[in-house]
Image 1 (cartoon, each protein chain N blue to C red):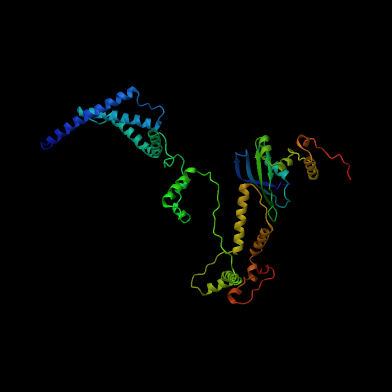
Image 2 (cartoon, helix red, strand yellow):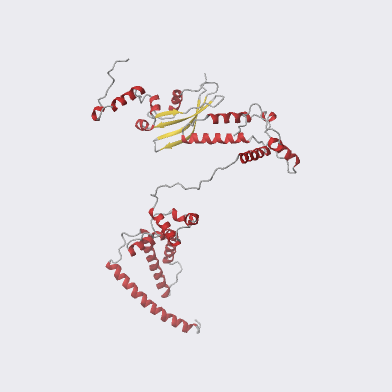
Length: 132
Length: 293
């Protein structure tokens, strides 16, 4: 069957300050649902070298379907990518793990730290009281 | 040679002799100084050094030519002529550069002569855009200041630089006393203006005017406005590589503009011209009710 998902790129710009190349990607998918980002990355990988990392985001399908423009950025080195890509996008590639402490636990810990002065703040750990 | 020219020639030759003696004396003094090393040029502008050397070579070639001509030789095909022409062209090409460097050289010479520049010297290094601003615009705020103190104060401002804190301009507050009647009048005026540009009135105008009939693909002004804004938003998003959020109001406007762009809409929907006819304002069912402030 014919692979009808096509990618067109526009406005390629080399951003030296953020050490990346940024493009506007137009995904054409007539008769199909919106293409997931992982597939778009795979198609983009055909145009980039294997050691480069690309991250795509911002895909909004036009009403009526068939066309989805979005943005893509390719980094030459992983270190540059880790520095310049926001954490939630790094998490999509598995390069960043969000800490799992819940908001309530963090606030309670902060309030316990308020009761103690100086270096003892660091040793304030989890609450020893049993759950009521 | 004519006999009448002979006394002239004799006087000219005598002048020439005197001048030559003076010039040789000066040149000898200069050469002595240069050989003694009184004019070191290593730390100077290389541009000026190049000009110096070129002028010297020009003089040498010129004197060679004069010598040859004075001893009766012909100048045709003389090698010195070509060299002279070459040096002359280079000097001509250097002249605009000279013009551009004139300011810098004047400044340096002045520093060297006077030692240091005074505070209010106009020949300081950085350009002062504040000095280029029209000083007439600040007349209203400074008419209580003394005339002689004014230029001094402005001069001080320009020298201190841009490190002053930003002070927002103090505008005179105006009392708000718009009555109900005035508000009503303004609303009526706006409604009249809107009614004058409605399709009914425009067609009436076309009927009675003598101007030729224009057939244009004119879209509803709201539609063109919305499409312009959409284009602007798309351009911004693609150049900044971000997605902007769309507020509810914006979504509503977009939906209404899309509905208006259908051609059948203008068949049944007419804008309200009660402001001109004097009747009560009526609205179609799908439009928002008039808000009474």
